[in-house]
Length: 333
Image (cartoon, rainbow, N blue to C red; front, side, top):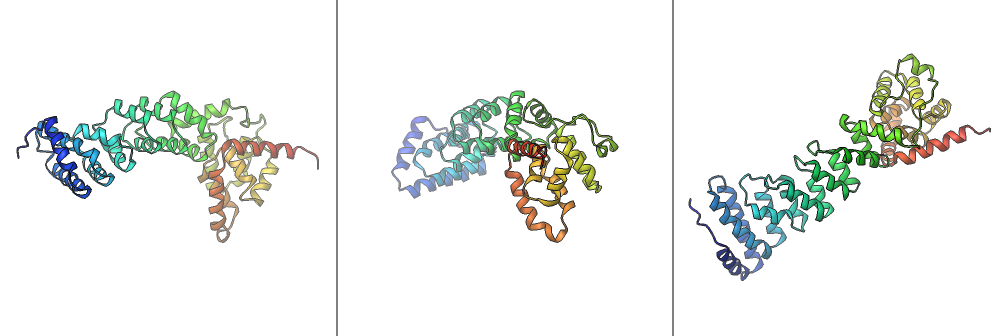
């Protein structure tokens, strides 16, 4: 098949002729051309791709969101896609049009991604977070405008490169975002930054000098990183060493073991969750604690509520609760 090159004048003339059609016909032209291009793109010469590109660019301003979305989904994954059209689609204000191109197109370069991250909407930023690869220069800009959902999306993407500055920002944000913390603690490259932030935070509980006997008996090192501590406590619980796990948790948050044990025995949805979140333990480990306490017939509905409460609880708020509980425990009754 031979496709003749189209000049900008010819494309404009084509656009004017299509603009005279009713909206449904304009959309039909764009959709049919996009389907044709998809079927022959791998055999088109470069000037043939340029021809389709010029036509698509001329049609985009006069076609509906529906038709632009159809074109975007068709050309987004193609290696030999119409470059100008790709850029137009990526910057489309409608996220249903922009999203597939932003997520998938190999034709978007870092400069394009930087521009998108700088000027486009939160929805566009979330689409950026799903690309297979993001340079650290791009993620730095995304984080400068990020909300909690965007930060979570970045951490969930192993192809998103994170500069030391970005990792530090995420660690700071994670102190007040339980979901983000739970995700970061599972990534060794990010968990270390959580430990650094925790060590520098004056509100974070400090481990006591005297270790409970249960901790000493298991040979556990002082000041273990949070990820390591979480794993050790979970291992104790898996072996039904509940007393040792409680002692380790009490030591980590500098809380009287008696008060923590009482909260563990009596309260699913209050104080004990604050103790666990103050470390913060992962939900998986906290869940094991609760399973060890409650019989199977009593667990399911209460654990669903407990998980919701745990994930909604901010680490900083949990630490304030633990500090107040510690002060109360020190008062005479």
